[in-house]
Image (cartoon, rainbow, N blue to C red; front, side, top):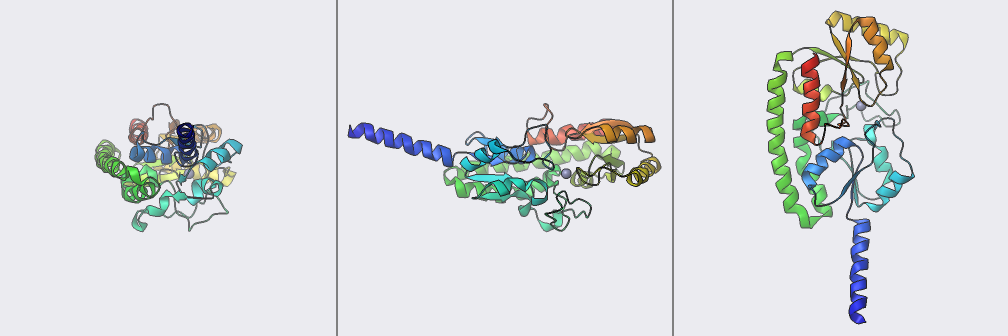
Length: 287
Ligand SMILES: [Zn+2]
């Protein structure tokens, strides 16, 4: 009897650990892809945002709130992008952008996605520069090891391997896009600034100044003249947003539309490396 009770108690303990600790939550797919590289298959990771949704316009429902309450740690990209994930969690919520060295942060006055959380106009899309991701790996390892000290060595080994892959990825993209150096890129919203800066491309302008901001007739007319004077042949929409406005601007400027995927929602994107390569290829083929 005592033996049975001991087994029951052990099972209960295991269950409670599983319920409380053995789950990592990520807010959106870029956070998931990065954390997955460090964690591997050791610990389950649940991503909150569905592939079709944009973190900018997302509002969490009961299932997200329930998922987060079970986890011991939540990773999100930045307060002014997916800060809603931090608001869901009373415990340990980690803002990944906090670990980015100041010198790597791109300031952008017109990129305050959320007017209630203006953090000095920092552009939150840092994950589109592989070297920015490399820069935050040691701190992410530290956060994970604080919760799961038994896997510290694994996290560090995976992280070291990932860092080397990021360097190789950066060189490959640099090499591939060198032929397009200096070209103006027009995006749906200012989501690619880190990528463009890293790979010698120029941000020409965006269809929406920030997500959810419908362009005014004045804004559209200024944008179309910028597209025309840059001699652009293409404008880039995004997988998570409607193509309607892009269509109007494409017709006005006689450009075609190609679709970028800053979040890595496309079915071809299975890893962080895929996310960068997928977008590089679209830019390379269309610019
Ligand atoms: Zn954005």
